[in-house]
Length: 188
Image 1 (cartoon, one colour):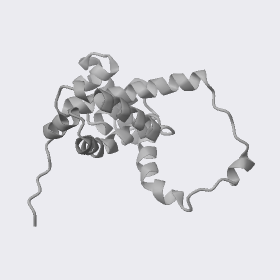
Image 2 (tube, helix red, strand yellow):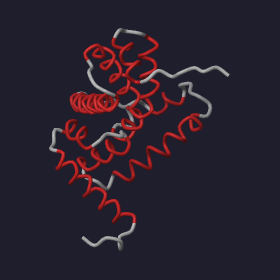
Image 3 (spheres, helix red, strand yellow):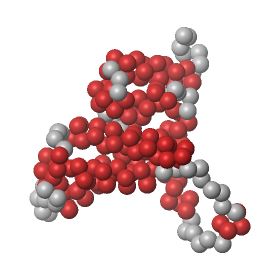
C-alpha cells in the first residue's frame, strides 16, 4: 500500500492561484457536487449550465481569492446566486420559443435517461417540495445553510442582510416546516 497524501485545501488553493490544472481540477471535484445540489434546487432546469458559468468566473478570479475553505464555499454560493439572478433577468428579457412536439420525437436520445436522473430527481424534488412552502428568503436561507453548508455570517453576506435577520428567517422557516410535517406539533 502506498502512503499517498491528499493535498490540503490551502495547498490546492495556492497551486490553483498559480494556474495549476491539477489544483483547479481538485477544487472542482471537491466543490462541484455541493454547488450542483444548491443550483439543482434554486434553478433546476439550468443547474449544470449555471454551474459552468460559476466555475468560469471562479477560475478567472482565483488569483485574487484570499481566504480559507469556508470563505471559498461562501464565494461559490455568492457567485451561484448572482448567476441565477442574471439567468432570471435574461429569461425575462428573452422568452423561450416553443418547439413543435413532432420535431422532438425524431431527435435521438439516450436509451434510459431515467437511470441517470433517478438519484438527482429524488434528492432535488424532495428538497424542492420542502422549500416550496417557504417564502423565497426563507428558502434561500435554508438551502444555503443546509445544502450549501454555509454559516450564518456567510448567508448574511450572500443575501445582503444582517446575521440576526438570517437567524430569524431560518427560525421561522424551520417552524413552518415543522408545522407542515406535524400540524399539531406547534401552535403559532
